[in-house]
Structures are given as structure tokens and as C-alpha cells.
Length: 286
Image (cartoon, rainbow, N blue to C red; front, side, top):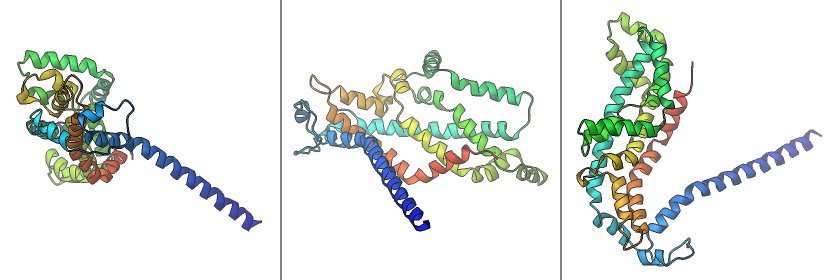
């Protein structure tokens, strides 16, 4: 009887495992198919793509012409440089702002701290469209359109990242803070020499997520810049898309997207474990 029950259990576990693997494979195909279609389209000729009344899932005559077109139709290299400057400066300034804000809410004591943090969190309920409109009016009034400060300033803080980092800081035992104060350590020295090294996975996660956010930024750069000297890669993709002779140049646009996506894909593959560890740690309490 026990052997029969054990045998049924083994068969049941195998069936469950097969179903799980099948579901995961099916889900992986759904997730990866857009990337496959993007790469496939980037190797199709402009004429061949437009001649396909029924989309084909393969190509018999791949070409690199679209990649050459992506860099010659528009100054994509300059847009790459602009995007790199925008991403690095925005991420660096944001890290400084959210780290200091999270430390203040997590460790310092001042009147109305809880109420202020509650009001701060309520900002997450404001629709992004309203924030974009307000930021556009402010940046325009300050005369910062078509400039890097105009691109960067609205993105130097994040309520969600402050909340995530605050929760992470609060997991560090209070005894470390009190011991540091007894030794005469200042708050800033404790923050950068104790808290930041301990909470490095969360800081790395926030950094990577912010880099991805800046790199993929589209709406704000389209609104605030009309000078090609300050265009980002998102502007370049739109220009390439409209560069088809009477029709959208989708293959060249896909080639540009492949090139632009490579740094982010490599970044995610290299730091994927730290991203998962940082998000999981930030969500824990106690």
C-alpha cells in the first residue's frame, strides 16, 4: 500500500512538473517573441517588408542596410551621447536626493515627520499627465527648454525609490546607529560608511532601474526639446520611423531599437541577481 501511494505521488509530481515546465516555456515564448520580431524585422529590406501583405516569421535575404540607415538617416551617435549624459547626471543627482531623503525619514527625528511622509507618499496618487503639464509650464517659465537642465530637473527625485530605500534603511538595527553616535560619528558619515554599504543591493537596484527609466524616456524629451542638439535616442527613433519614402521606415526603426536596447539588455543580464535581491530586500520588514 505504501509503495503504491509513493508511486502515485511520484507520478503526480512528474505530471505537475511537466505542466509547470510547459507553462513556463509557453510564457517564455510569449515574452521573447516581440524581441525576435524586432530583430527579424531589422534584417528585412525596406521594400521586402512593405511587400509583405502577410507577415513572415523568417527572411531569406537578410541585410545590414537598416543598421547603416539608422546611423546615417539621423545623427544617432549624437543622440546616444546626449542620452548618456542625461542618464548619468540624472541618476547621480537622484541617488544623492533619495538617499538623503530616505535617511531623514528612516533615522532622524523631527516634528511632523510621519505626517510629512504620508503627504509625500500621497504624491504617488497624482496622475503623471498632471505632473508633466506642471513641469512643462515650470521649465518653460524658467527658460530651460532645449537644455540639459530642463531635461534633467523633473527627474531628480522619486517618491517610490525614497520609500523603497527608507524601508531598507529601517531594517538596519538601531544599535548600529546608537553605537556610531556614541563613537562621535556624524549622521552623514554613518549614512555613507554604514548604511549605504549594508544596503548596497537596494542602491544598485534603484540605480539600474533609474538608468533604464532615463534611457527609455520618451514623452518628456519630446515635449521639452525641439533642437536636434539636445535630442535623445527616443527622438532619433521617431525621426527614423518617419524617414520612409511615403511610408514609415519600420525596418530601420527596428534596427535602431535593437542597437539602443543592447546596453540595457546587457545591463540587466549582468545585474539581474542584484535587482531581484534589492527589490526583495526592500519589500521585507523586520
